[in-house]
Image 1 (tube, one colour):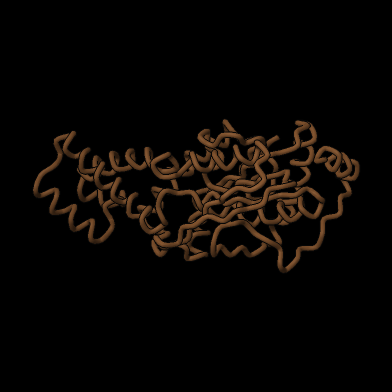
Image 2 (cartoon, one colour):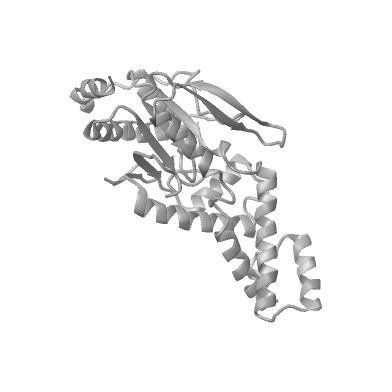
Length: 304
């Protein structure tokens, strides 16, 4: 029984001996995802382990969904891997689920959709504000080729561009992290199946090409904790979360991380900067309203 295991851990929590990190330590279920364990994040994961043990003991249930959310570079993947390892080693069977398997489009197509929405809504805004003309379109076409139509610096040369950017940004705000972009219904189906005690669940897998979509049947029998690691797992659209953890980072840290990983060749572009700003604003709002635990990049516990 989970509560009996938690009681045993609680009795020695202050002096709990964490196991050495194994080279073959399992990670999340995102295909092709490589997680390099950072020693700097080990204390964060150990702090989180202690906080979760206390919260799960206080709640008194036998199954828990724990969401771990934050921006890129906040340490979600590494912290989740470490936490999964520590919980399993302590006898609490835990599964790490990556929400990155549940967007509606592969990364390439999703990036293209984001740009399409920004430009489409920007054009509509110009029409609405009666700032559109054939001359404006000619300039826009050149900016599109250079991929600088989202750069605020360009608006100093073309004042009407600020209208285009304002409406384009508003369009993105209605897409990023929303149902149009992420399949929350399928995520919620998995969480519901787990909480109801379903022993085998078909889990979605998504790679980076259109033909890399499939499902793996995962055995959840005896599993007590499901960790949902995802930028958007702090959203109010995710149903069934028992404990929400936010790993807080800044847009600057996120951009530095993306450049370090070379995950996106345009990680320092004006468009990506805008996307990160919008996502960060949503993360901050979700952190304030939904997070039970908040840990800063330096490991400081900001909540509880």
